[in-house]
Each structure stands twice: as C-alpha cells, then as structure tokens.
Image (cartoon, rainbow, N blue to C red):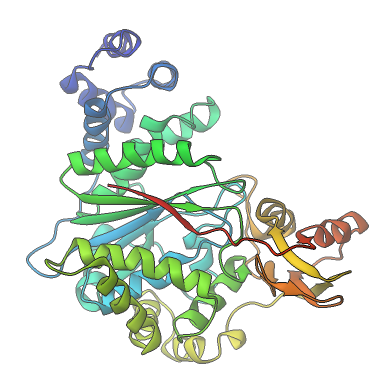
Length: 437
C-alpha cells in the first residue's frame, strides 16, 4: 500500500481514503507497514491534525485490528476513562458500585508511566490479584459478578499498541486525534453502550488548561458517539491531590474506607459524579441527581464493597484474604518500613498542596516508573492529613510520607514545601469544572 497517499491528504487538509486508512492500520498491527512509514504518517497527523471523520475511522480500524467484546441481552454495558491524576483511584470503587446498580462493567485499565499511578498497579498491590484476563475471561467475570478490571492486552486494539510505542519515541504523543483514537478504541472494543470520560486539567495533569482539556474532551466525545456509544466528558481540576491517600497500596486502603461509607469526601464525590452520570445515561427517566443518590447508597450500605470483594476473589485473591482485606485492609496490604510525618511550622489556612512534586517525590522512591520495565514498590506514597481551605495550627500534622529508604536533607525540605499556607481564608476549588456532551 502507498502510505504517501494518506500523508498527502493529511497535509492538504483533505479527508483520507478510509479504505486505505483501514489497510494502513491493519498493516501496522501485522507488521506489514514499516516503522518508517508509520512514523511519517504519525508526524503528519501530529503536525496537521485530521478531521472528526478520519478520527472515527482510525478508531474503528484500531478496534477491528483485534478482539471485540460482544454482549447478549441484559444490563447496560458501561465504563469510564480518566486521563489520570495524582490520587485518581475512582475506578477501584466505580466498577463495583456500578455493578451493584445492575450495570455490566468490563473495565480495561493501564499501568502507570510518568507521575501518575495506574489502576492496574494499585490492584496488583493486593496479594494474588490477577489483572491479566483474556477477553473470554473478562466476559465470564462480568456475567458472573457484574464487573472486572483487566490490564490492556495485545488482543484488544493491537494496532494501538504498535502506534503508541512509535509515538513515544517520535515525540508525537501530544496529538488530540491520536490520543482520542488510542483511548476510544480500547473502550469501544469493550462493547460499551455508554461511556463517561474524566478529562483532567491543571498543574498535575497532562492537559494544563481547561481549554486544552475541553478540546480533547470534544474530540473523544464526538469520536465515541460516531461509533454509537453514548458519551459525555466531565472536565475536572487536577490542582490538588484527589482524596487523602496517594500511592498504589494506600489508594486501595482509601478506596475500601470510602466503600465503608467513610473516607475522603473528595474521593467519594468524584465516584458519585461519574457513576451518577452513567446510571442516568442508561436508564430512561432517571435523573443525574437520582443516579448520584443510587451510587452513594451502594457506598454506604456495603453493596459496592461486596462487589469489590467478589471481584477480588474472581480475579485470584484467596477467599480469606479478600474477607480480611475489606475488614482490616492494613493487615493485608504492604506497609512501608518508614513513615515520616511533617508538622506545620505555623498556623494558617491551607492554600495549596503541590500534587506534582508530591507525585515526583513518591516516584523517586519507587511509587512510579521511569520506564515500562521498572518495578513499582506498592507501599510508597502519601497520606495527607489536611486539604485545601482548612484552618490549621502550629505543629499540626500536614502529611505522612511512607517510604523504605532514608530521606536525604533535600527530600526533607521538599516534604516541608508540599503544603503551602496563607494567612487569609482560601476559596476551595471545585473539582467539576464543566461537562462536554
């Protein structure tokens, strides 16, 4: 095939030949298209962009390059995707909460790379939890208990895996059409009816401004809708860490607290926002407000927690371990060798918690990866004892850093500077900034 024909269409702002584009994507997956040819095409899209029609076709071709889950009659099939953030643990609670509300949730998730942790890394801090499910195993799990969370694998959208690897080494990652096709292809391959996207913006997000986040959200919503999936995007702020716990095992701990009807109101609110939207999108005459109330009830009455336990057992966790995990998670999850608590040197109001530098410090101690081959240390992370806007006194605990190796002096100083105080009351930033439909 002549890839140059596609490139010329991109450069000239014309719609690409969709039959040829399909051949190109399948050729990428099979290896018939060379890395050089794929790189030239990626650079053209990165520089010139492409139309919504082309993005939809690119996404559709990526889906057909691999396995596609199909579902018989029954409960609506739903999922969410987040662009990632510091302390973003919503999937851990949302999948079981939705299953408790009679939705089917075949969730594909990823590992962390960069400053944010991945859902799969968090789940793998639970002894025995198996994220490596085949498409057939995913279907079986969903049929039996209503949800599963599995790592993205080569069976689903394999062309995306090849293209992403090339994007990573050719500086073509930050392209809205390419990001869109990569994300939506994997979600569409799940056979979804409805999808909620959590697109984050701010200092600790991939998209720094609300305008950039909304541009990406519009692209993903239009593409998913073009594939027949009801979709909406929630633009949320990533200026502050989400909830109280940051780090793989620590985020499991906080999630279990929330599914006991306790834990961080911030974390709870985001789960309810995303779940409420999905319930309203898949049930006639159900309002968003009523959808949120239903999700909240599953967090308070133990139904979401029971689905979480069943999911753990279904995915390899020993029955007794799963039971103790939901009752006394501190006894099951890995614990750091050292814990350093930082006290406030003065009184005031919490103006800001530096999410990015907190995440980078935790990453430097093993909480995240610098390359895909790195081994994550699950017990590393933070517990924040304060949040934005609260008034604190001198010597009040601000945060506790969970680590295994000794801290250098500069790291002690870095910990001290993570929480910034103001002598005047501070307005608390809202998480939900806008909605794109």
